[in-house]
Length: 146
Image (cartoon, rainbow, N blue to C red):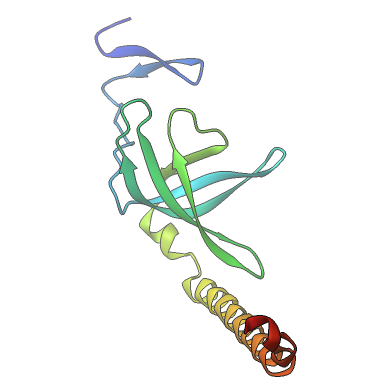
């Protein structure tokens, strides 16, 4: 092995790296866009666009906190994942700006707006049920409250 090469072990795989061409690509900052690989079920994985939202400098297990968008045909959710030395079933890689911009912002925003509207309708329904209860059943409980 010369001064220009080094053997590096990554996930149990030994690789000989030419130091003249090697570069570090895992310098992350809060706000960096990343692609998140998350496990769905069994051995199925999917990638989601994400953003690094924080670093928790725990002494024993430093952790990267990532928010990512998990979207399907009828829903879009913002989820968080914590990546550290003991994390399983999650990985991140840098994402190109143009790839992140290809995420359909309008579609995701529309799905979130629909979810908000449904939640607001459910809230109004529950308020109406309470008003109905107080109006029609409240008389039956009048003696108990006094």
